[in-house]
Length: 458
Image 1 (cartoon, rainbow, N blue to C red):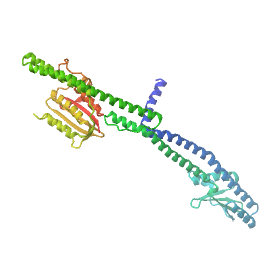
Image 2 (cartoon, rainbow, N blue to C red):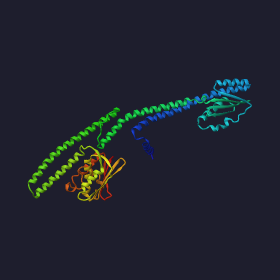
Image 3 (cartoon, rainbow, N blue to C red):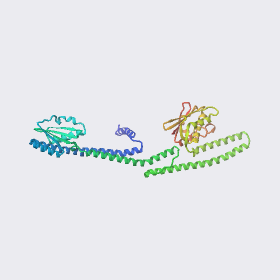
Image 4 (cartoon, rainbow, N blue to C red):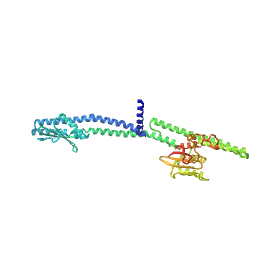
């Protein structure tokens, strides 16, 4: 196995994992681009500050205290008279120390023996370890360190030749409080910057979201209200292109509808005259066949015009699917019960009712044409509604599932309308479904025939 293949095998799962971890929305990804550099800068700055500046300052303060304690210890050891001890303790007050000296005392505990108890990285332990390093270097005598967390004092006891020198030092002399101030300032400024960046980013993404909603509504065949074109130059350019595209498509549809209305009139007028003339010519086998041909021509022209006209200019309205399908099934069950409907009573959709009723009528007509009984059902799944039309007919081969939606395609070899129609029924149905923003496909029916499935957005 070559190195390139190994890298490819490792790279593929990493890409998949990264794709799953990345947020989906543009707003979240933009904020991630802003947050990650700030977060990394904060980590690096904090590390440098604590590792260099803060630790260096703490060491310097600790060594200064250790040096002052060493001087006091030297003076008392050289002259342990009460006057000398009083002078040393009085001078220590000026250094913010509380000092006492007990002659004849011995340390009960030495810090070196108890150093394992100060290994946890807490503030008190850091102070103890820093002080211990300074005392080891400068005092060079046995000592003990006690930290009062409540009073925030550090008590340092040093074993001298004739007694014990105890020095109480406030923690502020050892531990610089500016570190917390710097960290709070960094965190606060970062939060403020992120809030400001989020507000600006929302203003930049709002036009993109508005454009996406408009494109989705237009793709589903719904009315798109006017929206203000704003945002960055590229966003405004995309919004203007969408508005112009929408206007061109609507204008083309209107022109096509108007043209087809004229074509319909021009074609039907001579056919009507021919039918009247044939009626006046009397009977006969030839006249009867000619009447049948004229009637077939009229049906074919009607199918062509219906396919070319599409959904027309009908506006979508909120429609109760149970009422629409119930009315359609009732009209088809006038002679006998051949259509069975199962639709929830409260299922509503935004539909063009006339076009969609024609769509379902074509499907049910095909089902009854090739089978004895048709079943139509509808059910809501999440943000979509699934409509199924089943029949008990012979069905069609699986390899023709996609071909039947092509204009003028028919399963039979001939183009005779007596057997297979013109071949525009399912293409018209597909156009209507797509105009509603839905999808349509075929499947095997549990009833034994063909199932047509329509998936529509709520």
